[in-house]
Length: 171
Image (cartoon, rainbow, N blue to C red; front, side, top):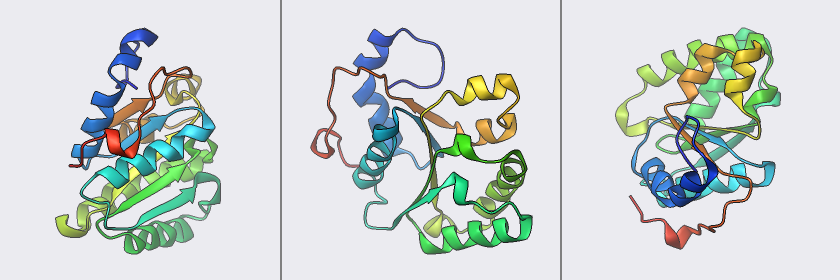
């Protein structure tokens, strides 16, 4: 894994555990890019090794987010209420329609800023494609990408390491 930026695969693989440890120690919004089967496993591993482990891990497929702005707001509030102190994992963010992306970026800013630190929810977004490429192509919101991209873990397709829950120090 490596943080956003172009790096050759060897250094990315060598720094994988270090970057995942950073993700565990911070409560910042996290974007995970990996093969489909790996994204949720990494998200759960980061959540489980963090101080949030005793709080809920709530999973939401991006395609299930409603298009209607009022219903989207209610869904987001419901996600935050369902996981106080925990993590909300939004998987397959590349599947979000453009209008949902626009509303979601505003809601994330507003809802996260109105929550008390004690019940602040960590947002973890997952994708199996390069969102930066989608931003460049105009099919993914640049504002949402940068809002989700505070910490970006990229799991190389052929990572030579296997991280387990036991290999990541608890925060």
